[in-house]
Length: 296
Ligand code: GLU
Picture (cartoon, rainbow, N blue to C red):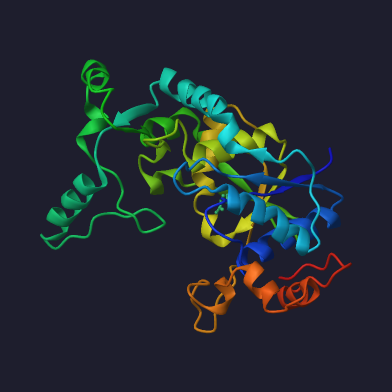
């Protein structure tokens, strides 16, 4: 089976060097193993996604010398498929409506922490969700269905559905070895599987589309490594195949911070306007043109 890779940016802004590094890593690894390289536009957020950024993504990646297969999948065009995946979780009683606002959660956490005990956090540092909605009866939840709500996964129940499946294939591209690591989705608590405004979330749409597109190798930044546990769980619940994963290093600025407000976060197009060539960018990132060399 031919390997399939994807670069999956969200069109919420212009691409910067961190995105270039991720896209070039995918492309280089796809070439190394004789794989295909796809671009996917993750535009489920109706507020933040902009057509200007979609067009800019193609321009900037093209400028870097990258080529991908057409047509490019746009997640905003596939809401019905995500809704149906959500429906499958609901049918199994694994998703519930949550009416808590961000403010409700923040107040609950602040009141608890005022007593001196830290509230448990997820791997991204956000407070784990614990609210009354998980125990609302179906009739109560149904009666409030017209109010703004998200859908959350009943994490403990979900994990107990398929514990035997919950390991992640961690790919080491330097050696080709795939290690099996235990997934730890419980660390995320009752994650949101559908947002208020769309019948999906990043987690849900990413697993549906990785399966739809036959992605075999997910290569993305280390900031998404912990989320893989949730993805693996959703794949198991929805009977989707599991790709193998490589989470590459993040580019850090001189002070060791993740791209924040340094020249590394300057949009590629601004670098281009300053006269930087694609060759210079590729060399700086460890991918000289013409050689699919892999930067560690
Ligand atoms: N769309 C996500 C982002 O831009 C990446 C998703 C993924 O690679 O799984 O951060």
